[in-house]
Image (cartoon, rainbow, N blue to C red):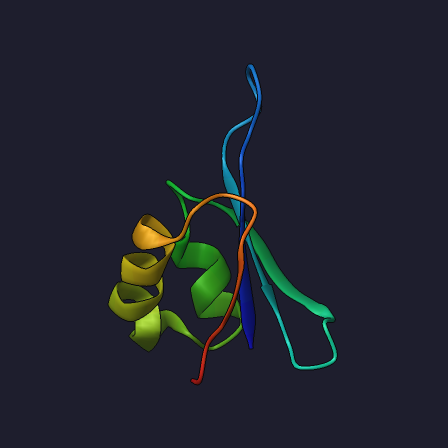
Amino acid sequence: MYLIKVKGVAKIPDYVQLRDDKFTLLAYFRVDRPEKSLDKIGLGDKYDYIMGVVRDLPFGKILKLDI
């Protein structure tokens, strides 16, 4: 699974993309509202881990997660 943090501009907020190994989009959510999207794809129990990684990840970088 891959994680990408996208910087928002002006009134558009920052977003996070979660993609599978074939780079298919699994989830796309605002950094400040991830709970519903993570629950929807079955990763609600990994919330603390994923959001910890998101906080430390620079914008525009792609990170491979082993979940």
